[in-house]
Length: 608
Image (cartoon, rainbow, N blue to C red; front, side, top):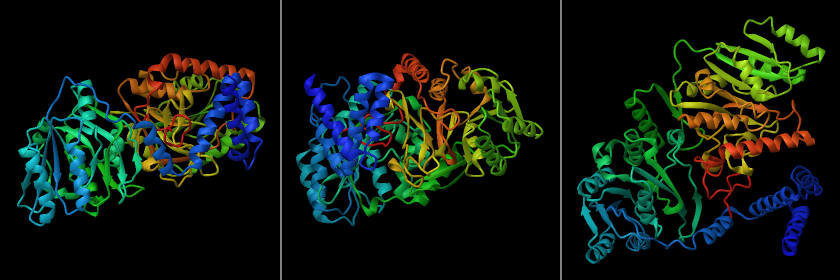
């Protein structure tokens, strides 16, 4: 006990002098606030989490990753007997690479802890004889290695040649000079043992510099269909069923450097989402090669072909970052009515700014605004309500009871005439004119549930970019406090993607889905009602989605204030308890996050 107290005091001292050096007494205030809300336990938790964040920010990314490797890969070679041991075919197109790199790649395969594999390496005439000699040396020694010559000068032809010659039930592609971790195949097959229905398995990966040092780990989202449409996040290591690949015609020659992206899109079209899974371990180490750099124009064509085959009317354009894409889904000729619901109490200036921004910055024409007056008493706003009620598409309805976000919005939906309801806080300001279209194009899709937006504080830092379950115990906002221009973790601030939940400050959903899940849970008066609602929609089988193309300012908590009274803190504790009791089975593990990333902060930092 004494040692624990000493450690906490040490961390507190470091935070006081280094972590808050611009305003050193902030740590005192924050610690006291947490102590008041949750006693010694909460204060200690705050100090520990703040200390972890400080340490992460003190080290550079590479130092943090090296620490992560030491912590997490100590037992990388521990394996257990598997009951299902299918043959896995590894396919490689031999390229002119450094001899040392080639040897390292070969050793990474022959040293695999899983032994039921075959390796087909295909080459064409232009490959150096010295490299061919190296492979032939190993081919003579290991019967599972097969070197084949391909007449056509094309990686696509080489891959298809290897595919036709393969005997394995599953295939993986190993790019020339890249390296598999020792347990790569074992972990893949172990995942198949856990679920024989799986038809696509992918893993986390990192990169290798010229000296063989590992850097830039990519800890990936779980299966994220809309992220895959935005960028090929699946990456380098993925395991596919051979018969499925052969059935869809293998690799297409016209896509060359983008042939794997094309294959993945055609492949997922034929399988269920439930038959896709990931392994949250670094199993692949990639070297960056000019020959492997993708052509974004070709990737764009791949996406256009995919949606054309699916008979989905879209327009594909380049995204906000290199090798990312924006899929524009067509709206019907007769666009649906959208009901914008805004609860408010007094705060005349804030509401007027919000309403003016909607009226002046909305290209979409078919919308109505429903303002829910929650016991306003200010004369200015009452006069403003009188004026607004004269507008053709604005109504003010009264809710003369104590504040309850869920009850207020459920009540307002009863008055909504729209096919879609857009829940909006009164302390937001619209930025882009096509904000409704950008959300509605997704909400109209039959497999999409709730759609959320990109929200900024008034200093142009991120307030909301999707919600991640488990952060801080219940949920937290992705990339909170990142700058507006930041790309985020592997471009996640710049691409459309699926999240478990989005914030109710700007949330669009069809009224049919809203009613199907019985709206917001009225036991959640203030906190987590949007998370609970999103999870109910997700539980029904819909994908929730976040788009960076709808942008608003969110002047958070200006209306309601902060939870600085005992009554408010008790209410918050009750709502935390409600969420833990109802959603404990999902709060510990977010499908769209990664267990190797921190749960102490919202910055996608490594868990070290």
